[in-house]
Image (cartoon, rainbow, N blue to C red; front, side, top):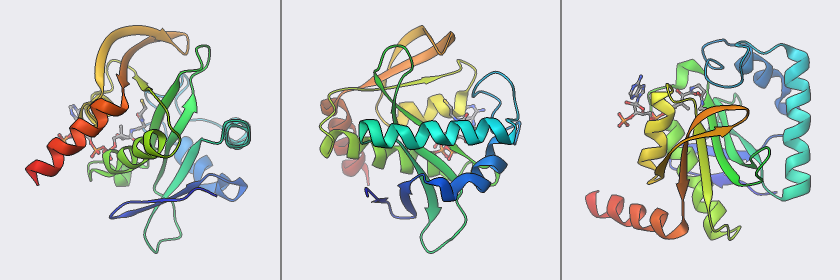
Length: 180
Ligand SMILES: CC(C)(COP(=O)(O)OP(=O)(O)OC[C@H]1O[C@@H](n2cnc3c(N)ncnc32)[C@H](O)[C@@H]1OP(=O)(O)O)[C@@H](O)C(=O)NCCC(=O)NCCS
């Protein structure tokens, strides 16, 4: 099993044990405001979605991780890589409970996920899409060094579309290291 670690976070692939907190997070309309179309997600749909996440790991050897602070049992969010519906491009995605917003966690987790995708899984390109109004998510994409490519139709709707190559990611990592 692939597990990832950052300074503050432990990431492990979602499993059926993750159902209850996922139901709770996805049942929050603020968390889901820019994900999907229907706001708070009912339990049955999250059961279905978790099934898709589990199949994604089996079929593609990549997928979504549950994210916890080191030593904590409760998850604060999820992030990972998955094929985009329709195009099969690999996208990075992330979402956190409201109490965990604004702490830099999405950037920290997504950076580790992307590093894994490029360095361990040998991906040549990772994309990300967000509702154009989702400023916080777009800011995370910027901080990862992703390139904005304009508005594109994904998931049946207009999305702000970003892409990243291993070279651009490593250059961004070097810039970040030089600053710190
Ligand atoms: C999007 C989300 C994952 C960001 O998580 P987070 O841990 O708060 O993100 P980070 O703290 O790493 O970075 C957020 C950045 O956006 C900025 N930001 C937050 N809200 C903003 C807003 N309304 N307008 C502009 N920038 C904003 C923050 O200041 C921060 O940038 P900074 O580090 O330069 O100050 C979180 O808000 C979330 O879970 N939202 C619901 C699910 C979701 O929309 N997921 C993305 C789907 S594409």
